Structure formats: C-alpha cells, structure tokens
Length: 109
Length: 113
Image (cartoon, rainbow over all chains, first blue to last red; front, side, top):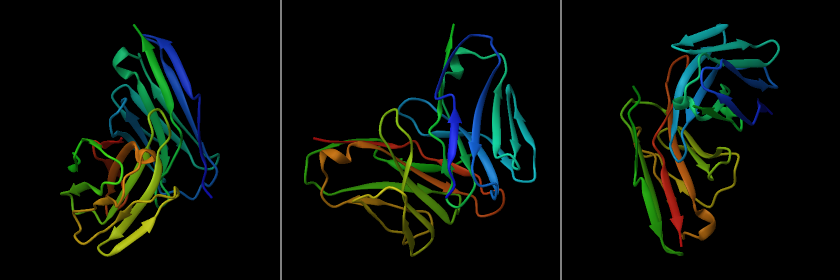
C-alpha cells in the first residue's frame, strides 16, 4: 500500500529565506505527483504537477522535483513571503491520489 | 482553471437531521472524490466515483452515502447527522486524460449540534 511522508511537519522561517519541503513515497509505480497548497478552512489549490516521465516543474518562485527511483520529491520555494504561509500537501498519483499529512509553513515578516 | 462547486459552504444543523452536500463540476470529468478533513488534520478519502453509476468507499469508514446519476453531479448524504460528523468535506474531480490532474472545490464546513 502506498504511503506518503512529508518532512518537516511544520516549518517557520523569516521572510526572504529559500526553503525546501520534502515528500517521500514507498511505491514508485506512480503516474504523477501533485503539490497542493491549503489555506486554513479552505479547499486545496494545485500548485505543480509532475508527470512520471518528468524530473521537475517550475511555476514562478516554486520548483518541484521528482526522483521516482528513490521515491522522493521536493518543493523549493524561493524568496519566501508572508503570503506563502499555508499548509503544503504532496499527493502521489496512484488511483485515487494518496496524500501526505502536509507541511505547515509560517513565513515571518 | 477548474470549475468545481460545493454547496452549501457552511451548514449548522441539529442532531438527527438528514443532509445532502452538493458537488458539481463543469469539466466533464469522470472521476470524482469526497474527502473529510478535521481542522488542522490530514485529508481522508471517504468516497469516490469513476463514472455514472460507479461509487466506491474510500480509506476512512463513513456513515455517509453518495450517488452518481449524472457525470457532473456527485452529492453526499448523511441520513442522520451526529456531532461526530462535524468536519470539513472537500469534493474533487480529476482529468480524464494524462496527466490526470486533480482539482478541489472550496469545501463545506459542517457543524452538527
């Protein structure tokens, strides 16, 4: 059974810092990996999707990488801002998606 | 841009009432999902559907039921609400073709008194 782990569970950084969120999964037979953002009491917003044949995807200050063979993905956030404060969830594409528990990020002004 | 809608957004209801949470999408997606999430906690898949007349239970046992009579509509029903059902309910759907991106609705926050 696929298991997804996100480390750290919580992270607090000063504004402007670059940071990395980690996601690991146990079964490499996936068809994609998605990173989501969730603000308190809200739904999930898709940030980046990496197909199984890809190594990375970029959107603005966000860069996500995927290493299927080692069962790892990272989400890199450059020049963090207070507006980046949210919970970030990693989900691996089996059917249905399997979610990690998330990393709660606080960016302090 | 994903078009997936949930109503109501907030609901406060008394114990024993029957409730239906609505979810609809206009993207023609075959696959739809319901998740339950307590505040600050992880997502739990409670139901999913891969098309009309197809429904499956998810990882978390739930007293709710679902139906899928039309592609665009995936309602969730609680026959008799209890305080333990107080939670946020999130609906999602995913693309029919690779890379099968998944999109979420805004959620329904349910409080049972």
